[in-house]
Amino acid sequence: MEEAIVNRVEKSGVVQLDLGQWYTHPKKQVVRIMDWVHPDPILREKPFREALAATDWEKYREVWVAVEGTEDSIIPTWAFMLLAKYLADVDSRVVFGSRVELEMNIWKEIFNQMDWKDYQDKKVIVKGCGSLFIPEGVYADLTARLMPCVRSLMFGEPCSTVPVYKKRG
Image (cartoon, rainbow, N blue to C red; front, side):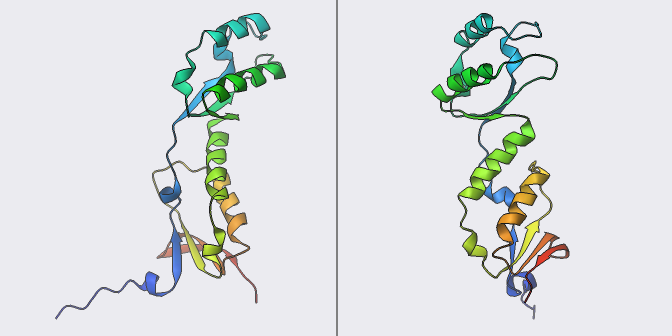
């Protein structure tokens, strides 16, 4: 007679968090503000406005857009504001920074919609492996949000975890 397989992790009351299950896979694009200007290292208003006016903004509709600047050029503050206006017209979510900063903002939005009370006094393991790119800062943000409610927080897989936090008392 075969014995039933018992999931000891499930019986232990440990909650496994797989961040990949929370990710919404939004449409994303990274652009450089200098893509709208000539190779001149100084962004000039008239050519910039003309370039923006000639752009097909529909390709950015409801897209998370990371707008990268450049250290080699002089870009006035109003240029970022003007670009943000065009992107807002097509319901884009704009982040001024790198792909990592874009991902951090997407995760911040996901985390802001979570009910962290679901993890009250639970032992939580944050899954460590996956194919999804998750910046390290996301794990730091997750830790800060979970610490006030969880009994313990670990990282890894149930067979091999790294303790991160344990509530005292």
